[in-house]
Amino acid sequence: MAFDVQIIVSLLTLVLLEIVLGIDNIVFISILTGKLPKQQQERARITGLSMAMLTRILLLLSLTWLMKLTFPLFTIIGNEISGKDLILILGGIFLLTKSTREIHEKLEGEEGEANYKIKNSFASVIVQITLLDIVFSLDSVITAIGMANQLWVMIIAVIIAVVFMLFLSGKISDFVNQHPTVKMLALSFLLLIGITLIAEGFDQHIPKGYIYFSMAFSLFVEMLNLREKGKKSKPVVLRNPLSD
Image (cartoon, rainbow, N blue to C red):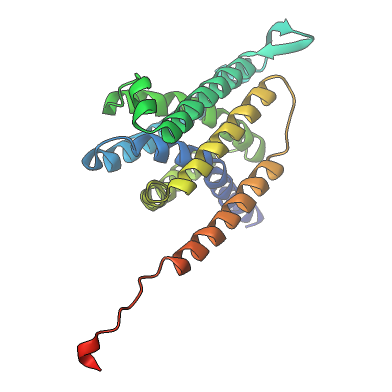
């Protein structure tokens, strides 16, 4: 009985952890799919999150290969760089580049969009999501391995978390795309995550609690701003002189 309770606790903890660690993935998917035609956005979100689930499961099934990623490959400025570190660094650079371009396009408008040569086709969006899924999955999977001993528990936790995120992703994407300031804040979060990934790659570990707290606090302030803006922008009711 105690063994069963332990498994259930591990499963619930892993599900919650996968959802929390998947927030940055949802934000990235929301930004990318928002650039697609409306009729393709939902399909892109489902495909992107399905790829995230598949990536995590494949990594869990290849634990031997995954553990080899922690072995040092070379040294840079006194820091040993392993396969995992290299993936985190490249992923962080990709995220910084992508976020910076998105912010530039957002601020520069049509001129910035004209300078942004990458065509946002369905295929290119899925490729970009898949690349970042691998980076985001590494941290999630390695954490899961440290918290549970049963492989099937980890896989079930990943599936439940992704299904839960599928229900949330549409609402999050719509909310981000409908509010320009929230979209800019989301891009700033991605910049922060990119810097964090690069720091992690160079063994400069930043506690995740600090990152998520700063993101949650910034989002809370933005929600207050949106609420205040909504109060000020209520339509004025005009008096009809004929009704007097």
